Image 1 (cartoon, rainbow, N blue to C red):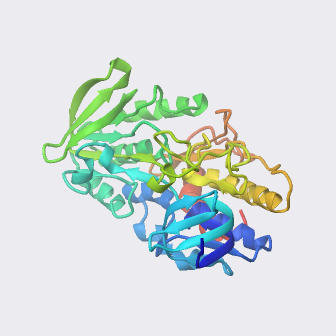
Image 2 (image 1 turned 135 degrees about the vertical axis):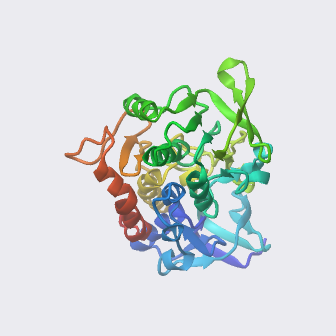
Length: 400
């Protein structure tokens, strides 16, 4: 089959993972690297929680994709729609095909707004918003600021999502705002979680239980939003811990997080795990595809069971580059990723809990001399200023 383009290394996705890997490959001397991504803008998504909480401007999270593309990398401004790993071909939205010798798959994650009936139709109106979209994060703050009394609901879906702490971070920022405004007893805050506890690591869960108690938040465990009537401002909640019984919550504002899964073309490809989420089927340590040794994946679209965070990508990117170059040299992939992820959980307008853990689901603190097992102001400064600087200036340039 003839094809117009061929690259030694093709990277699908120009987000955090794709740019980080491309930069590292260029720094390692690889001179035929191509990034396939149609985006004109590049976003630092972790800032969107602070945008929704009224603590950062949305514009700080946005730069042009061209400004972060590593020098010397070919950029095809198109989207992948299919991959044939046997023929080593990727088909794009425009109908072009790109042949590759080695493939890195990191197209990000699909936000399945439609999986919750009524949600897509009411986003941005009727007090319903979500920090999972750039254009909606400022709406979240608008709705928080205009809510002076009534009921506020914050929801999290079942299944893997990017930044698993984000659904509760915004609840704490909102509760903190209302308390500082003297409205703590006037706004009834509900947090709807599909999990049996507030957090999967016991040491951090103990801190967050105290945060919940401090704000007087009602937490509905093993529950999730399964339908929403925006105009009526009514949420239908399914209680999975009680045989799927349903109950309703009337709300004045609601922050929703959508179900998430791999992009459709990944789900339908031979690279997929084949289950409902359809992520790229990789070894969780080497990040190499389990059936196609010249294919690697990282970031949100990979099947590795880590928390889907930018911090995970920062640890995955060097593993992918080392193992990819080993395979290119005819050697075994020896670099290993241990599942590290960090979740900077904002608990107030000036406090943050830095939750760090790996596949063992045990705390793995990385900052020496600082007790990060509690809420801290210096960790808040790290979240607001330090991590964005690290992202733009070091991580995307393959230096961190």
